[in-house]
Image (tube, rainbow, N blue to C red):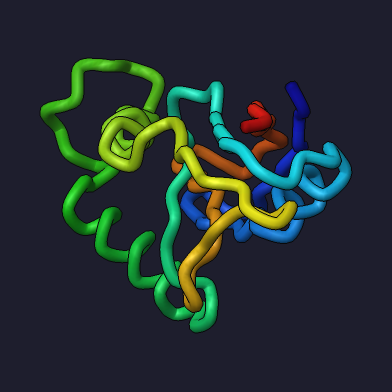
Length: 132
């Protein structure tokens, strides 16, 4: 298993980790197989979305912030990050990709994002590369 470190700078943001993940796959030497990208944090996640236009990431953080409001008085979790837990559950903790020709298979406009919902922080992402 490989570990990536991701440093976030805002409370909510999407960090494009596509190049880091692709570099780790290349370093592994695996040319065909499966890649699991996993986030072990309860207020963060992993998603695949468009990385060609940065406004997509901004739209995602803006819209999730409106739908899941940090100031909602109904939260029972008392740490002030309940919205981050809800957002993380909706985004999910992992993505699975196919490795072909030594690279993760992604669509033309797709990238792999670490989603931060309780930053800024230094976080970990784990990669499991399975030859096949």
